[in-house]
Amino acid sequence: MSEIKAPTTSTLKIPKSPEPLAHPMQDYLRTERLPHIWCSTCGIGTVLTAFIAGLQKSGLDRDKVAVVSGIGCSGRAAGYLRLDSFHSTHGRAIPFATGLALGNPELKVAVISGDGDIAAIGGNHFIHAARRNMNLTVICINNFNYAMTGGQAGPTTPQEANASTAPYGAYEFPFNLPYLAESCGAIYVARWTSLHVRRATKSIAEALVKPGFSFIEVVAPCPTLYARRNRLGTGLDLMRFYHDTAKIDHSANTKDIDILYQKEIVVGKFVDKDKPDFFTNRNNFLKNKLGNKYIPYEGT
Ligand SMILES: Cc1ncc(C[n+]2csc(CCOP(=O)(O)OP(=O)(O)O)c2C)c(N)n1
Ligand code: SF4
Ligand SMILES: [Mg+2]
Image 1 (cartoon, rainbow, N blue to C red):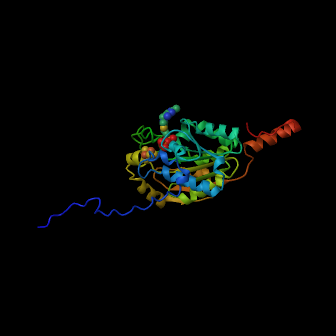
Image 2: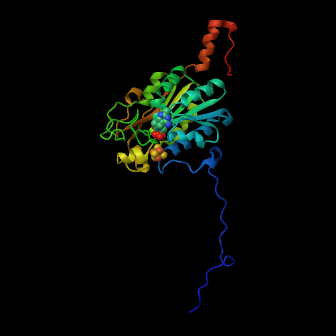
Image 3: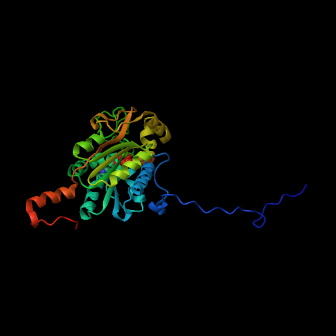
């Protein structure tokens, strides 16, 4: 019987590995920070993809764009972006972003953060930034819970949904975020799910170039906490659910689009109107009062 020889490095033909393909969005990502922290089939990465695509589509000069996040799984979004981006503190993304916008009116400032960050601890900042028509685009990734800290119920948890602090189901009345945003004065309001990547991308591109306060809610799966606790399956199962139950209705009245537990989700661009943004309003008002004595505000 002939002896079988193990291949040596001289006999073994190792195919030359092709050059690794560059990720199409690599230029916009801090790749040195990867791998990211998000769980498999989590929806946050999809929103980040939509944001980068929306930014590219908007035609804005990326050197004049800043992105701010708060704390939470969603709050990690800013840190992965190769832009001027800030991972601020819980609930304080909007005031931080407001400071940037005030300091440099040439900047387009976007906030990407979670439902807890924006609507609970940061709720007060949210309503006042919308009221002032501050020049911000706020993107809220709504996964219906405080994911990072263990799946507690938050201000958007639908009634009946189970959460670590609501073992018999949530009973509080949740916020309808588009209605809240519109009521407070937002000039652009849309809601999508993480399945609607192209539509969310288009909304982000539109919102980014619109002066004033724009708001986009993106409903996204949290498979590890919200979905597992409610036995809803993986993120893919939730994407199937969005596919089967989301209804696009741009003409829906925001007051009618509450999200009920595992029921139809109305999505669309609900508000797109013009109103003087914070700077225009301030300058017009004070110019009117003070005449030539007034020096228009152009940043610090
Ligand atoms: C002042 C303060 N309070 C509480 C926390 C704890 N905390 C960290 S993340 C988080 C919840 C984040 O929820 P959400 O904004 O919905 O983001 P998600 O993790 O769901 O993406 C909380 C309560 C904190 N970091 N700082
Ligand atoms: S805990 Fe939920 S929200 Fe956080 S990364 Fe995992 S799946 Fe995403
Ligand atoms: Mg959340």
